[in-house]
Image 1 (cartoon, one colour):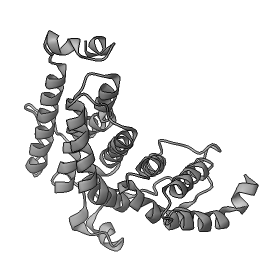
Image 2: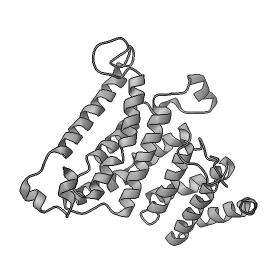
Image 3: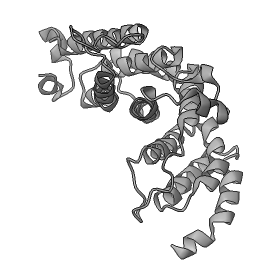
Image 4: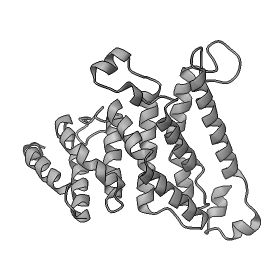
Length: 280
């Protein structure tokens, strides 16, 4: 570990150069190296502040998207405290803070690149093709990012004074009424309703489960529960949020019912081997 630590300044310089290379293979190697050092607990917030912006362009490049999504997904999980370094510490905890999470949601997850990937994957699935590795990497990062937003920030907005002090733009605060959150929840709905009857298709359906569970639990804590009673139906002053919250669950129920509908026997005969038993 001491030897690793002594090479960090040179490593950051080398990675910075490689991550701006025009060679996809060099970029992919650099991203793999980044994850290795991250796993070893050798990248503090100081190094991450230098390297993180260099990761972002590769999230929308099909030649490097798998390695880039893997790197950012690991960084998000460590920021949420879901992953530890091999030494047991969590040096990257809270690095993907509220502002970086907001920027990832608005600048990548709900931007045209991901929408295009999703649209193409859904059409391919309806035509009988499975999602490729690039698509799965994008889907996994979307689900991880959504889970991080919901569990950490969505129901816990900062006090106005602290937001102003940190230079945080109030209009970028992601709440249930923000259009970017609506777009992100729509992406999760599409993952939960992703078509196809293979193991890969059902694996895509399961990606959003963590986000839905956290949305249910934390929303209930806010009083977003249907039926009579004090503090329910969004609590006083939160009727708008309750409308969004209720609409999302109604849409998810529709997606789940659609996925649970047994297709015709003629369609089942054309499924891959083993898919019929999976659907039941």
